Length: 315
Image 1 (cartoon, rainbow, N blue to C red):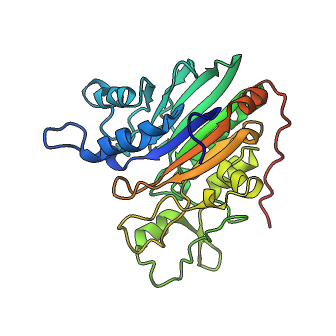
Image 2: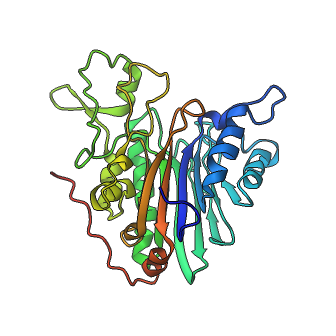
């Protein structure tokens, strides 16, 4: 694994279950401190894309600001409240990625995303769309609408903007090239009936088909999944390891690669390392770390790297 001392830029996606909980006095719980101080801070991320920032809008966003301090002076943003009551958040290192714009979308989302546009200091005038999202856990139709909203952000790449997004997708990647197969919904060990309805669509013959619309849509827009890139271009098969399903929840089919990152077709060529960070006992989702070559990012933002062709969605 590369370290921060290498000439890289590091991005991390992290769904911290219920924001680490509450301590006896209402302050951040033990899991929050472990995640931020023992797991995330040593990684020194340049960008952190959070889900389930449950308590970070409360008390004047004091928990969000505590995260800024714990992570060495990052600048934090938080999404608008939604039906899900577990907002998204996004933190960046301002000396590396000064923020140009902040958007606060609300409509069309169960849990609104956190969406900013930054510049990269190494390439003055560059623009990078950054977004942290959390797909609706309970509805394939809702996730399809949300994926279409993300496709609108992907459209910004036609204006010369770069794209970096992380999300708890709450559905599966297209199985082509994956190391973990889609769930077999006829397996008698999958007993969580609401979960089956949340994660599948009905086929004409009445069988259940795993939801992959978000992955199909973003890949179809020309974006790339750096874990898939690392596995198939860099030989890092571990990049495709499951990120969720390791916790005690039973009857849902086991570990799956639910938490994913997407990059534009130039930035993805700068990927040098992708790791699934084990957070067992701290959260029900592992964190996802994506390292990019700093020089590669600069060349991508200058347009000096040819875009990676779109992923073939059939075997």
